[in-house]
Image (cartoon, rainbow over all chains, first blue to last red; front, side, top):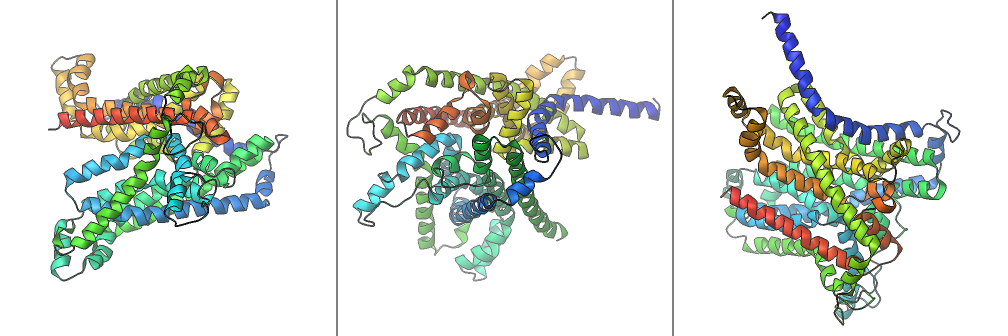
Length: 289
Length: 266
């Protein structure tokens, strides 16, 4: 067989493999890429169909967009902070126990992940209402006289979002902590490092990759969250995702809604890119060492 | 991991108490709806003063809820049936291609999972409108399959990568046809991953709400879409019955898979 024939054979084989992936690629192209491309195009068109940046000027000159942007970043930032405060100790506890027990507990952590987001949102409504279980417990304990406004506001949305994201944050952090060599911890202990010191200077830096993965997941997901703010926000919490819906349902303004959509996408790309870059730098240090 | 610290019993106890509280936080919203679903009252009082099955009756005797249930289950099954085979083929292709083209295909297939749902929903609404498919089962199905593909790929790709393809080649060279190789060599070993992928695809579709809210209509309305509308407008105790049934179903499925997996790997 000549070299040219072999090359042709290899090419034919590659084409065959690409054709195996074709059905999935065509579907993703048709139902995920095309819609996004269309939104990009629509954001630069006026109602009459002329090419312009009018939609962007319109949304960027509106105070609603900026407050929406602020709400989006505040929700995502607060969700991530709380996930870290709750999730890192939880992951640490799991990583410190036997794999058998950890796996059992992990099932409990995963269970909410399997239940519908609407079931969970409903559960929070029931718990957090004025006459809900949380308020009635607080009142019967005498901790508060009047019911606290826990739902249909920022607080309620935040609780729902943390509840959704926490399992997704804990999993990569736990995996990273599991991978830490026990001898490193023993060495730290034998050299007299206190538990707290060991966690801060050994465990956390060594699991930074997992914490970054978890943070990336939390941020990318929460930036576009729709269901939770739509229900637990009760119309008073308006991140970009809610703004998009309202621009469409109230004004039928596809141009502005698309421009807001592009803004959201840019936000996802920037934060996603930043977190990926950070992880790359982190693993680069490990690679060079 | 913290075994080296023998004298830190208090810290460890505190960590466990903290973790237990988080577990309560995670489980509570799902569990609270169970007693409420058996309440006789129109109000969401807790604990309920009288018990009844009336909300289950409301659910099972309502044509719109029943239609949404049927639509959701049908969409879930169709999503799994379509997404898993095409993801399997794609993962096989990625495994064989290697290099940059493999990374590109992999990235493209995962991209729907990081695109904000609301963007996919309004974009898909327009694309479907052009094709005259808004409000149809086909339209919603396309949206669900595209969200299930990343999930199926994430489950299947590592399994296909681990699989020793020399076995398949050996079977082929010994004269087994494609069907025998598939049924005798490939499926028995990848069966667990394939069924996990199918379950995940089914659950992805069953729980999907944002695309359904924007794209589905009338008979193509899914259970989450109706639940969303019902929760936004007023709190209806029927949702408690649906939620309880849902949680029961999911717990059963997870338990079943967990036991089976344990059976496979003693």
